[in-house]
Length: 417
Ligand code: EPZ
Image (cartoon, rainbow, N blue to C red; front, side, top):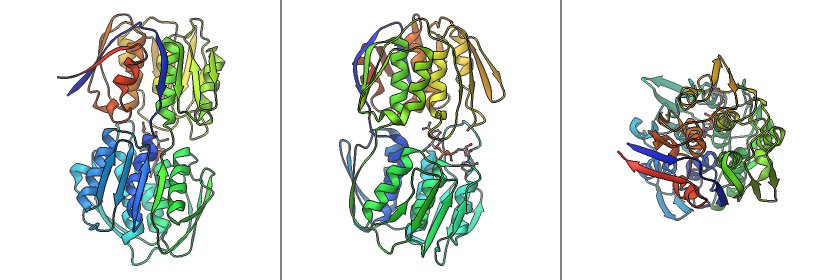
């Protein structure tokens, strides 16, 4: 097991460069197998989720080479066989192999995906879409066998705008017969990144980034080169670190409009923030105003920044409210923040953060990826030493987090225990 130890109170200044977006890269890598030729993807983050996906690709017989952030994938000799549970369980995004293998071979056998314990995380919308495209779905002891004589375009409507299900429709429908219209699609930037990737291979997708996407099936998908967009959630996490402990901390390689919902909220709190073309510079300040935030799908306030923002709200002068509308169990960080000295009440989907409170270092645990990020931020701010156990959760989504924070002045170490 790995743990992170942080000596709090150190000012952060200098530059942090943002890596490629985890939630885009974890879709682009499985999507590569839809091509019959070699695919090159640049700006891939070096995180354990990508390693897990490469394990699945290699298990299927794809040839994967990695040169720093550049990955090439040759799927010409893939054998479409059942993906074992022990590897598909490692991450939620393994479900993109459902859409990709179904889209290419009209058949896929794999187990229910893994993922953080932040809610039930069903895949009913994914399966509903596959069935509407003509697939027959059997499920036995968490093993899904999805099979189609042929895949035909259809009119699909999502009850909730699901990011994963939206991307899986792109993967399953891009080689289907005819036209697919997807209504109430999610609009996240990662979806646009995947649609552009598929179009570069020769797919015909329009409307990605809006709530209605049209996919005209094509026969063949060829080679292409694609760059992963910057990770807006990693960027937001470090911007919040700057609001807590920064002295002109600059977060580089950012697409500012991707985190506008956060930066507007930070301005509302009174944070001194400068927004450049591809960077954000931010400093800490003491008298922050309390705010109220509701998480929503893009372009609303992202659920993935709800837990990191909670740490900042602990320091605000008054009572803030945070409403989590996407997941039913995304407040597991709260008891640990309270153990550090925060005063946060949970009431169903809402938390009330009574500030300002001092945080004191102690032993805490990362329960999920973004809860872990929240506790790293708390450790940077806290008096004394904070130890965070089970940080494998954090390393899944934050490339080189120890080096990135150390380089701007944090006293942070990673230990194997
Ligand atoms: C993606 O998860 C991200 N993960 C999540 O990031 C992110 O929080 C989420 O989108 C929302 O933005 C990846 O991209 C790998 P959803 P996903 O389908 O696709 C319900 C992180 O921290 N739903 O948009 O699984 C679901 O339960 C992770 O990086 C159904 O009901 O999320 C949730 O309440 C955490 N049925 C809501 O929709 C379905 O078939 C949104 O989920 C699918 C989803």
